[in-house]
Image 1 (cartoon, rainbow over the protein chains, first blue to last red):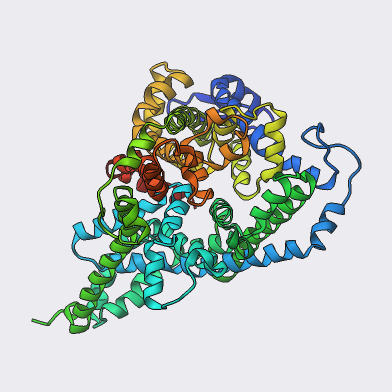
Image 2: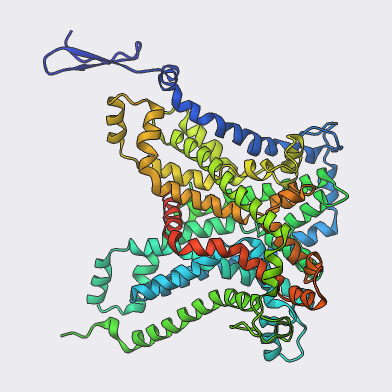
Length: 329
Length: 296
């Protein structure tokens, strides 16, 4: 039989060649593939070990949130399962205090750090002088590379009693409370430092999307008599819409994950900032790891935060898929 | 000739305004740096009376002398360099090998191995289980507590994966025909042609290790001689101005001067390496972000 008949049972494909002979192409099973190219699988070994030990074991380690952890217990604790640690923090005023702090700081930071990169990217897009544009980009990316410790150090220096920000404040409102002595200062400090650090870097994706917009669209709009503002409204913004949706989804999904390290340094550096700057993650750290250590309670609060975060990410992603038809995955 | 609408009066006014605004952005971004540098070189009297803004007032180098001759500072600085070099090397090896493997279409279970990594972006163990893990592994107060948990950043991994996926298949096929095995292809073909992405990844990891402080605070509490320079700085900041106690051996004058600008001096010395290489490597960082964006 000279016809190419693929026979499924033997997992063979036959291909009829030009000279009339039949070439048998055998499909390899998974195991055969692995045996043939076992070297590729050795690449996976160490990284998989890494993921197992440093990512997945701690995930499972959250089981100590449901157990009384005693010093000397293993990673997963021991003893019967209980929900008492969840009950404990849910009934704590202190927990709800940091919870709402977290929500307020998260939302107000998002209100600035989401739109500002878009605005800066649009403004940069109107700059015709390539060297000036490049200069603004390079300089505005810079704060992104600084350690949180440096950022907070700079903040402390600027807001110290002889610092520039304080002098500026005194010049505008004579007799105002010095920044470091004002408990209300921590949220503005946090938000402003986030803006300073993230706005420039945040423009990269938008600027990339802007370069993808077809110049012919602008040409056509110009012929139709659209001025630059109209062009921005009807061509530029729709052109970066997809990037905006993706980043919006990501931002809303992670709004609770405020900068733990920065807030921790701020409240450790100035005790007055505790009342308004303490958030869930800093609270978990204090409850769980500062003495006296309460691993189980800390783990319970931490798990609560992670689950909310996970739900938020998946929720906003599903919402964005339904509403605008674009999603992260 | 029809006058270009882009050159309308309104648009010209906007462009002048835009130029001013962006110059303002430049100023606001740079000012904190300028102020800290000015303080580092100023005298205590000028700093405490609030006269230092853009330029050093009462030029003074005493604090630089004190910090640069401080044993703890140098020890911590040396530690930071060790963490950065060793950590970056380990992270590069781990990230490159895994990214290459999961970028190969012939890998059985490719989707699964990718998902294993991606899931960790959305759900993590949390600080307490991680702390218990480090304790149980016996890594507490060792350099491995800082390096190993940071060995793979999933974001970097996905950036590398999308780079490898775009690798020209014919090239690898040709190498295979020439008799190179998987290791040979990876080492002699793939890596030499991936220098740009390797540089980008190395920079991402190096900056992360250079800047890292919290794991050190958590896991090196009893190993003062292993602390990175960020912990040195953190202790100065949290001690809220009283950080000079470590340096108080000098004259009274000296102690006042050191207290006034030791933070500024230490900060400048810490960010100096990053700022020195920044202009030359900036383009690699941007490349990295773009490649990462392709993924999403």
